[in-house]
Length: 263
Image (cartoon, rainbow, N blue to C red; front, side):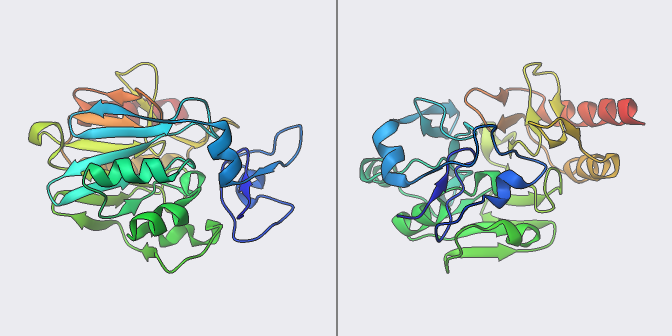
């Protein structure tokens, strides 16, 4: 089976000794060294976890920490269900469960740390995976279902827009759901815009595990781009990492605070 890095869960198209994602300064190779697994081993070790995360949004992850620990989000959008970010775990029962919920029309991923088993997911549902072309070098398993896009925005549904902010990675992207939160809007941010314990603020980092701050010009640009979008909630990368109200103001206030501290 295709090898999967234990630390970041990137799946590669062939066996290798290194994981470029983990050797990059935004991630890390653990002191114990590079380790590998595969999807069958993951299925044997973990159990899937599917539960609501908000109105019209369902989280999909595992009962234990798999890789970085992020969960995917199933968005019940007007034009059909859409999957944002990914967990490495996938099996036949999970596929059947999601198809019973209406299936999915496509997949988009915020940045390379969450590319993981995207090809497995795309093949299981016969849908495209939208990845920003700015991060093409990090794709571990090329496939015809991967659709690269460029520029600042891409519509992927009647009320769904991918927005490239460039935070964390060149292709660092968020998903704006204008129909979310009863029409007040939702921002699905992965850790491009990081939801932190203090829900009155969010954070911006170039590397989270290595504590490297994001460049001020990039944060300023991201805030300027997001100023044009309305959203009540911000859904981050981990279970329950959600800003439930005043999301737009929280993001703008956080960017101002960040820029004050780094200036």
